[in-house]
Image 1: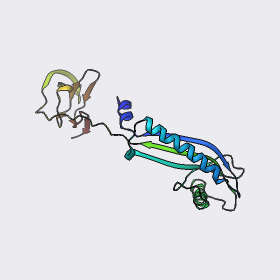
Image 2: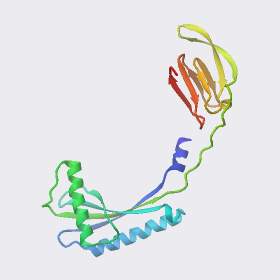
Image 3: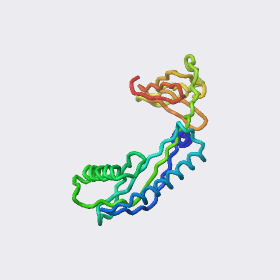
Image 4: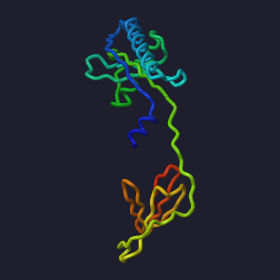
Length: 205
């Protein structure tokens, strides 16, 4: 149930990436432009297939970068949609800043390599509207049962959860039954039914 609701409520996301090696000082920005163009086309085709409306689409570009001879890369946003030396320098500056934030140091004097291009596509769809419960009067008991609580035997009321309306309040000790579970309220606990049918249990009211 929770997984299904999460699936329906979450945005659609997909990443598209390709290896794209660009070495300093002669960065081949034409190669990067071709990579971004192909990845962006793939992202648009995926959003089309998922029937995401134009107003619900977001496409972001990133590059994977590392210092020369480094064995791992950082993913850095590529600002804008142009593959220009100015945009490359902004990405390099962002890499130095991100490296310093993560590892407490950076090496601006070291050449930076681009190792991959990545495009992230996000599709925002209409979210489901959950039904709400109508308010009801005082919850009606289905019966009672003897329970040992607070150091003594007590009569414990039994309620059917399906008959509880929004904002219903039940004081423990009490038993709330439903098809797939039973909830026992301890003495001193108060359960409130919220607008979506959840039981909110608190100590001492």
